[in-house]
Every structure is written in C-alpha cells, then in structure tokens.
Image 1 (cartoon, helix red, strand yellow):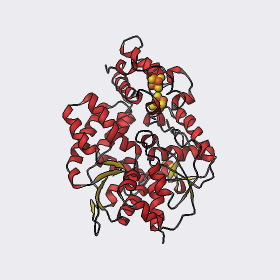
Image 2: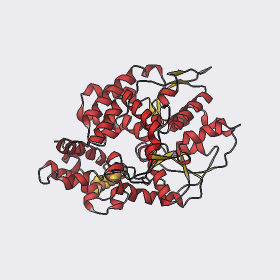
Image 3: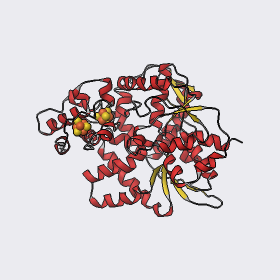
Image 4: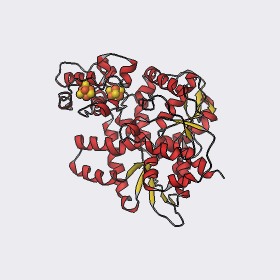
Length: 424
Ligand code: SF4
Ligand code: SF4
C-alpha cells in the first residue's frame, strides 16, 4: 500500500486548509476535510480503518481542487494522497464499466474519433442543441443523466482533423506545438480555432502534433494508474520526438497543463523509474498554458493595444489548475483588459465544483452544491461573459449558471482575444 503516513505525520493540524476546502464547504465535517483525509489515510495504511464503501465514498468526494495544498504551511500534497488512495479503491472495487470505456477512448484516438462522429450524427436524438451555450440539453432521464442536464455538444470535425500538421508563418519569430486537450479537440473546437488565428496574427509557426493523446488526467483522478502510466510514457516519448524543434508546447487547458507538468512529476517520482524523471524534466520546461506563454513570450499585449475596444464586459474565473497550481491569474487579465472591461467577481478563486468524472456522474449532487455557490457569485457581477482557461470549468459553470437562471455566456480567453484581433 502507498505510504500515506509520511505525509499525514507532517500535518500540524493547524486547520488552515479547512475553510476554503471545496468538499468541506458543502459538507462541513472533519472527515471530509484535507486534515481529516490525511488522518483517515494514515488509519487505512495502518489497518485501523477499513477501506470499506463508506471510506470509498469519503475519498471520492474530494474535488482535487488543490486549495489545501496552496494554503498548507507545509505544502502537504493532500491531492496526491487522494489520487493514490483512489488507486487502492480501484484495485479493491474495480472501475465502473462506463469509465473503462471512456479511458479506452482516451488511449485510442481512432476509437474516440469514431465515437465523436457518431455522437455528432445522433446527438439530436437524445439532446437539444443550445448553440448560444455551446451545449446540448438531455431530453430524457437516463442513469446518471437527468432530463435537462447540459453537456458540451459534439462538433462535426475535431480540431486535430480540421487543421494540417504544419501551419507555417511568413517570417516566423517562434515555433510552437499545440497540445489541445480532449474537450477542446472534440467539443469546444472554437478554442483551437482562436489559438490558431492568434498565432497566425503573431506570425508564429504552428505545429499540431497529430498523434497526441489525452494527458491522462481523467484516468489518474479515478485511480486507473495503468492507463495513466501508459499515457505518461506515450506522451513523454512523443513530445521528445519534436521538443528540440519547437520553442514551446502550449496548452489551452488548465487541467491538461497541470497534469503534464505537476502530476506527471509527482507520479513519476513515486511510481516510475528515475530516468523518466530526467526525460520529463526536459519536456516540462517547454510546456506552458496558452495565456501565460502569449503574455510572457510574445508581443500580443502590445499589439492588442491598437485594437478596437470590445463592448462586452467580462468577469474572470481562476481555474484551480492554473490559479492555484501555477498562480496564473494576471496573465489572462493583462491580455484581456487591453480590449475588454473586466468586472471582477467577489471570489474568483473559489472552485467551480467540476470535480472530475466521478463527481460529474455518480456524485453529481456534490457538483451542483459546490457549483451553485460559484454560480451565485458569478450571477452577482454586472457582466456579459464569464471566462476561464479551462474546458472543465466551462462545462460546469455553463450548467450551474443555467440552473441559477443567469444568462451570461462562457468564452475561453483565447476566443475573446481572437474576436478582438479579427474585428476590423
Ligand atoms: S483538494 Fe480541494 S476538495 Fe480535496 S481536500 Fe483539498 S481543498 Fe478539499
Ligand atoms: S493546512 Fe496542512 S498542516 Fe495545516 S491542517 Fe491542513 S494539511 Fe495539516
């Protein structure tokens, strides 16, 4: 069993992690708090607590939002502990069939492409398309999917199928590879369109590595370490094949970026051969979130100064995986404020409550409770659009705003920037 006590023993019980914990704020109990999780994990390791259905339920209720890690004076990696106990849970109880099918798709692009195509062709049978929300609404009650639920709709052509592998610039100043992420590849393809148009505007050579697969985050957060490790090995090897030919690999998704950089590092350190750590270190130094890279390594901000100001007012949500893990907050705002007014919400750091595949399916009531608090905060702002650099936040916020009766629409910051650039 994983040695949880190494971390649990370093907890000084200060409780700093408790007030902002996403699960604790909707279920205020010590057992569902970071400090409580660490105590329980030590008990599980030492055999004092059985990893029974109740313990499974408790450990699956963590949103992996990273708030506890950010505020802990000892920087204790509670999220990493939860990921590891989920592996023990998966070993003991197995992984639900629908999740195994989904993880198979993540590893096999050909299969995901077919399912996406079929999904696009038949989505209107079970769902009503709501184009303004970039979503589809279920028409019926099916298990884990109540009538009226909003999900991201499928697109006719994925991002990876839509563009050639190389899009050369005329006088390129830099060359970047795009790692698009599954949701922006199949559902929110406007994000990739916007990124391509911004890079063209900046005269940057674009490389779209066609054999890229999922970063592995959904499998990792569910305890499927076999799939996770296969994807870690695959992605590192694949990135190595072009890393010396690009200045950066840029990723328009917070969760994928955190997975490729932070989670790979933690996983490799604990579970893989040391030589993988060295290989990962080399590619990690070139992986960036898109707004971070555009802000730090291009003149986009200066160029936006000459663009017409846009009429829409924005409010910006800090996704946990960019805001907390990498402290990326000012970069998207600095770019956006060149052309938009931003009205800040009262708590931009509060987790939206997406939580991952288990919370979005088997524990959706938790996603609604956490999401409604965020939705009220967003609803209170005088703005037209809510923005964040994360498709998981997009899916969750779109649905929770709909439930809260707020008609703000969600746009990725790249979509907003591209709109300003392309408008004459
Ligand atoms: S990751 Fe988030 S939800 Fe999980 S224990 Fe930490 S603060 Fe709470
Ligand atoms: S902030 Fe860190 S040290 Fe303090 S109670 Fe939470 S996990 Fe323990």
